[in-house]
Image 1: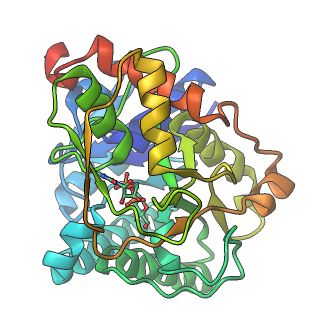
Image 2: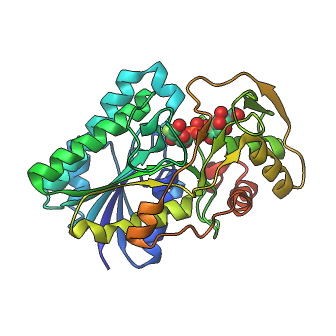
Length: 330
Ligand code: UFG
C-alpha cells in the first residue's frame, strides 16, 4: 500500500485512475480546483484538497498529507479547439501547473511523476500506427503545451533525478464498468458522449465533421481506448520509475471511423443517432491510431475493453444512469 497525489483527480481520466488506485488498496489525495472536475467524481475514500496547481498554499496543504510514492498529474486545460482561440492561456497555464507541481514534489522529496500527455504531440502524423519514434510536431497550442511539459520533466529528471512517465493518450472513452464514474465535460466536444446525448435526446443531433477524408468511409479514424484501461496503464508504469523515465503512446491500436462510432452507439442504444453531415473541423488529422507495443512489452499492459462495442456500452450505461451528469448526485 502506498499514498499518491493525483492532481485533476476530479476530472475524467483522473477520477478513473483514483478508483484504480483505491481498488488496489492505495491511499489517494486529490488536488483539483473543480473548474472542470466534479466533486461527485471524487470517491469518499480519497482526500480532496480544492485548489489550483499554481496556488502554493494549496500545494502545501496537499503535500502536507503525504509523503507520496508518486504524483500523477492530470490537471490541465485539454480542448484542442479552445487552445487555438487562447494559445497563450493553454501554454501558460499547462506549463505553470506542471512546473509548480513538479517543483513541490521535488521539495517534498517525491521523485516519481506521471504526466497526462497526448496524441496531439504528433500533429498530422507521417504514418499510422504512431509509435514513439515519430516526430513530435504539434499543430495545436494544446499539443505544444504538453510537449513543453514533457520537456520540462526532462530537466527535472536531469537535475533532480525525478523519474517520470509521459503517457500520450489517444481518444479516452467509456466509463467505469461498475458505474462509479463517467465522462462529463462542459462544454462537451467529444464524439462518443455527443453521439450518446443525441441518441438519448438530451443533446442536439450530432454533426459529422467532414466526410471527404482519405479514409475508407470518408470520416476521420480515431483510436478509442477505454478510460479504465488508461487508468490501469498509470499503475503499470509506476514500477518502471524506480529505474528510468519513460514515454509511451497509449491506445488500443485499432481505429474506428466517425461513421462506425455512430453505428455502434445506435446499436448499443437500440435507436439511431440523429446526425447531419457538416464541414471538416479545422486541425483534425484523418487518422490517429496508436502503437502501444512499447508499453505492452515493458509493462504487460493490455486493454481489458479493446472493442468499441464494450467501450460504448459502459459509456451508455453511465449516461443512462446519470442523464444530468454528476449534478444528479449533488
Ligand atoms: N467529431 C465529429 N463531430 C463532433 C465531435 C467530433 O464528427 O461533434 C469527430 C472529430 O472530427 C474526430 C472524432 O469525431 O474525427 C473524434 O473527435 P473528439 O473531439 O472526440 O476527439 P479528438 O480526436 O479531436 O481529440 C482527441 C483527444 C485530445 C487530443 C486529440 C489529438 O480528446 O485530447 O485527440 O488530436 F488532443
